[in-house]
Length: 331
Image (cartoon, rainbow, N blue to C red; front, side, top):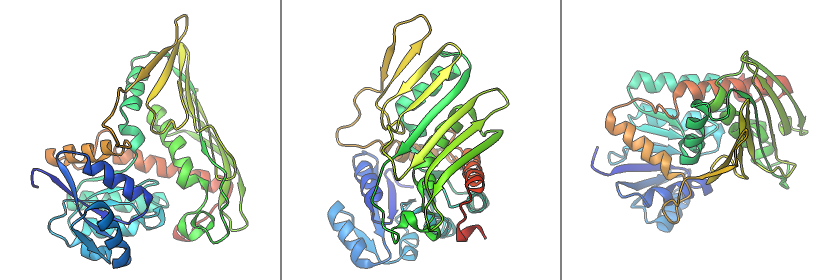
Protein backbone atom coordinates (compact mmCIF):
# COMPACT_ATOMS: atom_id res chain seq x y z
CA UNK A 1 0.00 0.00 0.00
CA UNK A 2 1.19 3.51 -0.79
CA UNK A 3 1.45 6.24 1.84
CA UNK A 4 -2.06 7.31 0.87
CA UNK A 5 -4.88 4.77 1.12
CA UNK A 6 -6.53 4.62 -2.28
CA UNK A 7 -10.28 4.06 -2.24
CA UNK A 8 -12.63 2.78 -4.89
CA UNK A 9 -16.25 3.77 -4.33
CA UNK A 10 -18.84 1.28 -5.56
CA UNK A 11 -22.17 3.09 -6.19
CA UNK A 12 -23.03 6.73 -6.69
CA UNK A 13 -25.89 7.56 -4.31
CA UNK A 14 -26.07 10.12 -1.54
CA UNK A 15 -24.19 8.08 1.05
CA UNK A 16 -21.38 7.46 -1.44
CA UNK A 17 -21.14 11.21 -2.02
CA UNK A 18 -20.95 11.93 1.72
CA UNK A 19 -18.27 9.30 2.28
CA UNK A 20 -16.25 10.52 -0.69
CA UNK A 21 -16.29 14.10 0.58
CA UNK A 22 -15.12 12.94 4.02
CA UNK A 23 -12.30 10.80 2.59
CA UNK A 24 -11.12 13.67 0.42
CA UNK A 25 -10.82 15.75 3.58
CA UNK A 26 -8.23 13.36 5.02
CA UNK A 27 -4.51 14.00 4.47
CA UNK A 28 -3.53 10.38 3.82
CA UNK A 29 -6.43 9.06 1.73
CA UNK A 30 -7.90 9.63 -1.72
CA UNK A 31 -10.72 8.28 -3.86
CA UNK A 32 -9.11 7.14 -7.11
CA UNK A 33 -12.04 5.42 -8.82
CA UNK A 34 -15.81 5.07 -8.77
CA UNK A 35 -18.13 2.52 -10.34
CA UNK A 36 -21.81 2.36 -11.12
CA UNK A 37 -23.98 0.11 -13.23
CA UNK A 38 -23.71 2.70 -16.00
CA UNK A 39 -20.64 4.61 -17.11
CA UNK A 40 -22.67 7.82 -17.40
CA UNK A 41 -23.62 7.72 -13.73
CA UNK A 42 -20.06 6.92 -12.68
CA UNK A 43 -18.63 9.68 -14.88
CA UNK A 44 -21.06 12.28 -13.52
CA UNK A 45 -20.09 11.31 -9.95
CA UNK A 46 -16.38 11.38 -10.80
CA UNK A 47 -16.65 14.82 -12.40
CA UNK A 48 -18.52 16.16 -9.38
CA UNK A 49 -15.92 14.89 -6.93
CA UNK A 50 -12.73 15.18 -8.94
CA UNK A 51 -12.13 11.42 -9.22
CA UNK A 52 -9.72 10.24 -11.92
CA UNK A 53 -11.42 7.05 -13.13
CA UNK A 54 -15.06 6.14 -13.65
CA UNK A 55 -16.26 2.64 -14.49
CA UNK A 56 -19.57 1.40 -15.84
CA UNK A 57 -19.26 -1.95 -14.08
CA UNK A 58 -18.29 -3.22 -10.65
CA UNK A 59 -15.88 -5.71 -12.20
CA UNK A 60 -13.77 -2.94 -13.72
CA UNK A 61 -13.46 -1.19 -10.37
CA UNK A 62 -12.31 -4.25 -8.43
CA UNK A 63 -9.81 -5.06 -11.21
CA UNK A 64 -8.16 -1.62 -10.84
CA UNK A 65 -4.67 -2.21 -9.43
CA UNK A 66 -4.53 1.27 -7.92
CA UNK A 67 -7.49 0.61 -5.58
CA UNK A 68 -6.55 -0.59 -2.08
CA UNK A 69 -9.98 -0.62 -0.44
CA UNK A 70 -13.48 -0.81 -1.93
CA UNK A 71 -16.28 1.07 -0.19
CA UNK A 72 -19.59 -0.68 -0.93
CA UNK A 73 -22.36 1.94 -0.89
CA UNK A 74 -25.07 0.10 -2.78
CA UNK A 75 -28.49 -0.63 -1.26
CA UNK A 76 -28.11 -3.51 1.20
CA UNK A 77 -29.77 -5.93 -1.21
CA UNK A 78 -26.55 -5.77 -3.27
CA UNK A 79 -24.03 -5.77 -0.41
CA UNK A 80 -23.33 -9.48 -0.57
CA UNK A 81 -22.75 -9.53 -4.33
CA UNK A 82 -20.65 -6.35 -4.39
CA UNK A 83 -18.50 -7.16 -1.36
CA UNK A 84 -17.96 -10.74 -2.55
CA UNK A 85 -16.79 -9.48 -5.94
CA UNK A 86 -14.30 -7.12 -4.31
CA UNK A 87 -12.96 -9.71 -1.87
CA UNK A 88 -12.52 -12.29 -4.63
CA UNK A 89 -10.51 -9.67 -6.54
CA UNK A 90 -8.19 -9.26 -3.55
CA UNK A 91 -9.53 -5.94 -2.27
CA UNK A 92 -10.13 -4.94 1.32
CA UNK A 93 -13.76 -3.92 1.89
CA UNK A 94 -15.76 -1.44 3.92
CA UNK A 95 -19.43 -2.39 3.47
CA UNK A 96 -22.38 -0.19 4.38
CA UNK A 97 -24.99 -1.24 6.90
CA UNK A 98 -27.16 -3.18 7.21
CA UNK A 99 -24.22 -5.50 6.51
CA UNK A 100 -26.30 -7.85 4.33
CA UNK A 101 -29.91 -8.94 3.93
CA UNK A 102 -29.60 -11.81 6.41
CA UNK A 103 -27.14 -13.60 8.66
CA UNK A 104 -26.44 -16.32 6.08
CA UNK A 105 -25.12 -13.75 3.62
CA UNK A 106 -23.11 -12.08 6.39
CA UNK A 107 -21.49 -15.39 7.38
CA UNK A 108 -20.51 -15.99 3.77
CA UNK A 109 -18.83 -12.59 3.50
CA UNK A 110 -16.93 -13.05 6.76
CA UNK A 111 -15.80 -16.55 5.74
CA UNK A 112 -14.62 -15.26 2.35
CA UNK A 113 -12.64 -12.39 3.88
CA UNK A 114 -10.98 -14.71 6.39
CA UNK A 115 -10.20 -17.28 3.69
CA UNK A 116 -8.53 -14.59 1.54
CA UNK A 117 -6.79 -12.86 4.46
CA UNK A 118 -8.45 -9.54 3.64
CA UNK A 119 -9.82 -6.77 5.82
CA UNK A 120 -13.61 -6.49 6.05
CA UNK A 121 -15.69 -4.12 8.16
CA UNK A 122 -19.30 -3.05 8.37
CA UNK A 123 -19.61 0.73 7.98
CA UNK A 124 -21.27 1.24 11.37
CA UNK A 125 -20.08 4.80 11.89
CA UNK A 126 -21.86 5.01 15.26
CA UNK A 127 -19.30 2.68 16.83
CA UNK A 128 -16.44 4.93 15.67
CA UNK A 129 -17.98 8.24 16.69
CA UNK A 130 -15.78 9.82 19.43
CA UNK A 131 -18.81 10.74 21.55
CA UNK A 132 -20.18 7.19 21.43
CA UNK A 133 -16.75 5.78 22.22
CA UNK A 134 -16.57 8.04 25.28
CA UNK A 135 -20.06 6.93 26.28
CA UNK A 136 -19.08 3.27 26.15
CA UNK A 137 -15.96 3.98 28.23
CA UNK A 138 -18.05 5.66 30.93
CA UNK A 139 -20.56 2.80 30.96
CA UNK A 140 -17.77 0.23 31.15
CA UNK A 141 -16.20 2.14 34.05
CA UNK A 142 -19.48 2.08 35.98
CA UNK A 143 -20.46 5.75 35.66
CA UNK A 144 -24.18 4.87 35.73
CA UNK A 145 -23.94 1.53 37.52
CA UNK A 146 -25.32 -1.59 35.87
CA UNK A 147 -27.37 -1.06 32.71
CA UNK A 148 -31.01 -1.85 33.22
CA UNK A 149 -32.67 -0.33 30.12
CA UNK A 150 -31.61 0.95 26.71
CA UNK A 151 -34.15 2.99 24.76
CA UNK A 152 -33.51 3.99 21.14
CA UNK A 153 -35.60 4.79 18.08
CA UNK A 154 -35.15 5.92 14.48
CA UNK A 155 -38.07 6.91 12.29
CA UNK A 156 -39.49 9.40 9.84
CA UNK A 157 -42.67 9.60 7.78
CA UNK A 158 -42.08 9.37 4.06
CA UNK A 159 -44.35 9.24 1.05
CA UNK A 160 -43.02 6.02 -0.43
CA UNK A 161 -44.96 4.73 -3.41
CA UNK A 162 -45.41 0.94 -3.82
CA UNK A 163 -42.57 0.83 -6.38
CA UNK A 164 -40.06 2.49 -4.04
CA UNK A 165 -37.14 0.34 -2.83
CA UNK A 166 -38.34 0.75 0.78
CA UNK A 167 -41.55 -1.07 -0.20
CA UNK A 168 -39.83 -3.84 -2.17
CA UNK A 169 -39.05 -7.13 -0.34
CA UNK A 170 -36.56 -8.09 -3.07
CA UNK A 171 -34.53 -5.00 -2.16
CA UNK A 172 -34.70 -5.58 1.59
CA UNK A 173 -37.39 -2.93 1.98
CA UNK A 174 -38.95 -1.76 5.20
CA UNK A 175 -37.86 0.22 8.23
CA UNK A 176 -35.83 -2.48 9.96
CA UNK A 177 -32.74 -2.84 7.77
CA UNK A 178 -32.60 0.82 6.77
CA UNK A 179 -33.27 2.42 10.16
CA UNK A 180 -33.78 -0.25 12.81
CA UNK A 181 -30.22 -1.46 12.36
CA UNK A 182 -29.10 1.62 14.30
CA UNK A 183 -31.08 1.08 17.52
CA UNK A 184 -30.31 -2.65 17.39
CA UNK A 185 -26.58 -2.02 16.88
CA UNK A 186 -26.57 0.54 19.69
CA UNK A 187 -28.10 -1.97 22.09
CA UNK A 188 -25.61 -4.62 20.98
CA UNK A 189 -22.71 -2.22 21.53
CA UNK A 190 -23.67 -1.79 25.17
CA UNK A 191 -25.09 -5.20 26.08
CA UNK A 192 -24.03 -7.72 23.44
CA UNK A 193 -26.33 -10.19 21.72
CA UNK A 194 -29.71 -10.54 23.48
CA UNK A 195 -30.95 -13.74 25.03
CA UNK A 196 -34.62 -13.06 24.19
CA UNK A 197 -36.28 -11.15 21.34
CA UNK A 198 -39.88 -10.00 20.96
CA UNK A 199 -41.24 -7.78 18.19
CA UNK A 200 -44.40 -6.50 16.55
CA UNK A 201 -44.91 -4.48 13.39
CA UNK A 202 -47.24 -2.83 10.92
CA UNK A 203 -46.62 -4.39 7.51
CA UNK A 204 -47.19 -2.94 4.07
CA UNK A 205 -49.30 -4.74 1.43
CA UNK A 206 -46.00 -5.87 -0.11
CA UNK A 207 -44.96 -7.50 3.16
CA UNK A 208 -42.25 -5.16 4.46
CA UNK A 209 -42.31 -3.51 7.87
CA UNK A 210 -43.49 0.09 8.06
CA UNK A 211 -43.42 0.51 11.83
CA UNK A 212 -41.63 -1.92 14.16
CA UNK A 213 -41.23 -2.21 17.92
CA UNK A 214 -38.71 -4.50 19.57
CA UNK A 215 -38.17 -5.71 23.13
CA UNK A 216 -34.80 -7.37 23.70
CA UNK A 217 -33.89 -9.10 26.95
CA UNK A 218 -30.66 -10.29 28.56
CA UNK A 219 -30.12 -12.80 31.33
CA UNK A 220 -28.49 -9.99 33.33
CA UNK A 221 -31.94 -8.44 33.70
CA UNK A 222 -31.26 -5.67 31.18
CA UNK A 223 -33.82 -4.82 28.52
CA UNK A 224 -33.82 -2.73 25.35
CA UNK A 225 -36.91 -0.95 24.03
CA UNK A 226 -36.27 -0.16 20.37
CA UNK A 227 -38.37 1.07 17.46
CA UNK A 228 -38.09 2.12 13.83
CA UNK A 229 -40.53 3.54 11.32
CA UNK A 230 -40.96 4.95 7.84
CA UNK A 231 -44.49 6.18 8.62
CA UNK A 232 -43.92 8.21 11.80
CA UNK A 233 -41.70 11.08 12.90
CA UNK A 234 -39.56 9.78 15.78
CA UNK A 235 -37.20 11.80 17.98
CA UNK A 236 -34.34 9.49 16.88
CA UNK A 237 -32.91 9.68 20.38
CA UNK A 238 -31.48 7.20 22.86
CA UNK A 239 -31.21 6.79 26.62
CA UNK A 240 -29.08 4.39 28.63
CA UNK A 241 -30.50 3.83 32.12
CA UNK A 242 -28.41 2.32 34.89
CA UNK A 243 -28.70 1.61 38.58
CA UNK A 244 -26.72 4.79 39.43
CA UNK A 245 -27.75 7.23 36.70
CA UNK A 246 -28.49 7.57 33.02
CA UNK A 247 -27.10 8.93 29.77
CA UNK A 248 -29.28 10.87 27.34
CA UNK A 249 -28.33 11.11 23.67
CA UNK A 250 -30.03 13.82 21.60
CA UNK A 251 -31.66 13.60 18.19
CA UNK A 252 -29.52 11.68 15.69
CA UNK A 253 -28.09 9.50 18.45
CA UNK A 254 -26.31 7.42 15.82
CA UNK A 255 -23.79 10.23 15.15
CA UNK A 256 -24.05 12.58 18.14
CA UNK A 257 -21.88 15.56 19.00
CA UNK A 258 -22.73 15.40 22.72
CA UNK A 259 -24.58 13.53 25.43
CA UNK A 260 -25.77 14.32 28.93
CA UNK A 261 -24.52 12.22 31.84
CA UNK A 262 -26.89 12.26 34.81
CA UNK A 263 -25.35 10.58 37.86
CA UNK A 264 -27.46 10.03 40.93
CA UNK A 265 -26.95 12.92 43.37
CA UNK A 266 -24.86 15.01 40.95
CA UNK A 267 -25.44 17.85 38.51
CA UNK A 268 -25.90 16.81 34.86
CA UNK A 269 -22.71 16.83 32.78
CA UNK A 270 -22.74 17.59 29.05
CA UNK A 271 -19.95 15.75 27.29
CA UNK A 272 -18.90 16.69 23.75
CA UNK A 273 -16.37 15.48 21.24
CA UNK A 274 -15.04 18.95 20.57
CA UNK A 275 -15.15 20.47 17.09
CA UNK A 276 -14.43 18.08 14.27
CA UNK A 277 -12.78 18.93 10.95
CA UNK A 278 -14.85 21.56 9.20
CA UNK A 279 -17.19 20.19 6.55
CA UNK A 280 -16.82 16.51 7.44
CA UNK A 281 -19.87 14.46 8.35
CA UNK A 282 -18.37 11.89 10.69
CA UNK A 283 -17.90 9.13 8.13
CA UNK A 284 -14.21 9.97 8.05
CA UNK A 285 -13.76 7.98 11.26
CA UNK A 286 -14.58 4.83 9.29
CA UNK A 287 -11.91 5.58 6.70
CA UNK A 288 -9.36 6.37 9.41
CA UNK A 289 -10.02 3.08 11.22
CA UNK A 290 -9.87 1.07 7.99
CA UNK A 291 -6.53 2.66 7.09
CA UNK A 292 -5.12 2.04 10.58
CA UNK A 293 -6.14 -1.62 10.59
CA UNK A 294 -5.00 -2.35 7.04
CA UNK A 295 -1.60 -0.75 7.63
CA UNK A 296 -1.27 -2.81 10.82
CA UNK A 297 -2.14 -6.00 8.96
CA UNK A 298 -5.28 -6.57 11.03
CA UNK A 299 -8.04 -8.57 9.28
CA UNK A 300 -10.80 -6.75 11.16
CA UNK A 301 -11.38 -3.79 13.45
CA UNK A 302 -11.60 -4.29 17.22
CA UNK A 303 -14.03 -1.36 17.28
CA UNK A 304 -16.41 -2.85 14.69
CA UNK A 305 -15.68 -6.59 15.03
CA UNK A 306 -17.06 -9.02 12.50
CA UNK A 307 -18.56 -11.21 15.22
CA UNK A 308 -20.53 -8.17 16.35
CA UNK A 309 -21.86 -7.57 12.84
CA UNK A 310 -22.87 -11.23 12.61
CA UNK A 311 -24.67 -10.98 15.96
CA UNK A 312 -26.61 -7.90 14.83
CA UNK A 313 -27.67 -9.72 11.66
CA UNK A 314 -28.90 -12.65 13.76
CA UNK A 315 -31.00 -10.28 15.83
CA UNK A 316 -32.42 -8.62 12.72
CA UNK A 317 -33.26 -12.06 11.32
CA UNK A 318 -35.02 -12.95 14.56
CA UNK A 319 -37.03 -9.72 14.53
CA UNK A 320 -38.12 -10.39 10.95
CA UNK A 321 -39.10 -13.90 11.94
CA UNK A 322 -41.28 -12.53 14.76
CA UNK A 323 -43.03 -9.95 12.56
CA UNK A 324 -43.39 -12.17 9.48
CA UNK A 325 -41.14 -10.34 6.99
CA UNK A 326 -39.44 -12.53 4.40
CA UNK A 327 -37.09 -11.57 1.59
CA UNK A 328 -36.52 -13.65 -1.56
CA UNK A 329 -32.85 -13.88 -0.55
CA UNK A 330 -33.87 -15.81 2.58
CA UNK A 331 -34.82 -18.84 0.52
